[in-house]
Length: 201
Image (cartoon, rainbow, N blue to C red; front, side, top):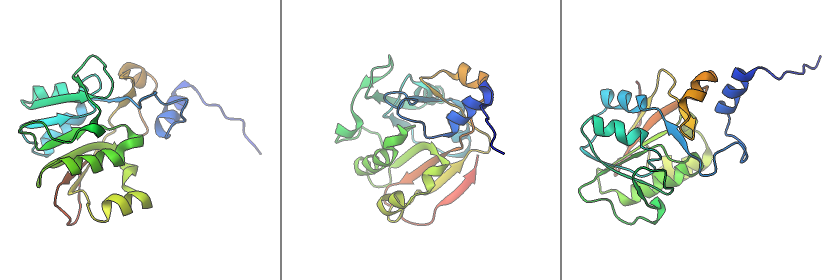
């Protein structure tokens, strides 16, 4: 028997959150703000350099938390959202002075390109730290273009879900039932091509 199931508001919100979204559903520039809790769990389990470039800073959710933890943060974004400087990351050809770490939650549709461009810009031993869906681990294209020769040194998998909210609307996300999407911090060290260590945080 075929069921005509429409669910309730909560289930609809979670389903949308778990999908890759249609072009109509997604924010125009793929802006999904990350809960600062993601930084809290990262710094408790991984030592970050003092100076960090947040190259898709949005409204500063991650940058501000990093500053609170004592980091010197260079914040830029393609779109002026009232925080940081306006810069197209893909047009950058140098790192900020004294910076050997790029950390961000990149627009997911360009995540592979963000990682690749970060690794191009970073000096040997520099860190590329990306907040990504756990499903970023899969896919033949990513394997051939990225993982085959430049695997991450660490995948720091969240044991509890972290919110990513469209246009930074965290209250609406919580009221809608939270998120069904699994995320992790992926950490590349330029020049490293050994085995990937997975750790739960």
